[in-house]
Image (tube, rainbow, N blue to C red; front, side, top):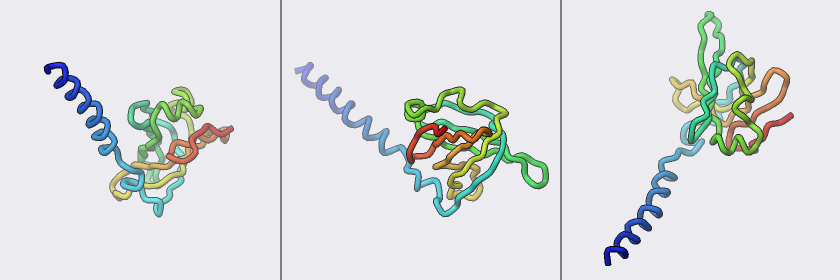
Length: 135
């Protein structure tokens, strides 16, 4: 009888926890606005390979001389890796051009659904669309 209860408890955990994780993840449309496209050129400050998303921080000089740092949300590390993006695809100091969607929150510097183009013209697609490194 104890074994049946343990098996039932384990089965419940396996079935319930993934559902909670899935429900906790946000949709792109919840945070980013396709009606707010943005394109800018700046320098990579850092790239964070973390789950559930890779973040690329890009510093852009503003008119007054101050820097604004945009946070570019990419896909999951495994997804980007399988499609050609490696940890050394971008380096701090690289000049990149980013095209994506601004956050719905006007105070946020987050950008999603982005394409990052490095100086020699190679593109890294980090949004939820076709994910591959283009030559």
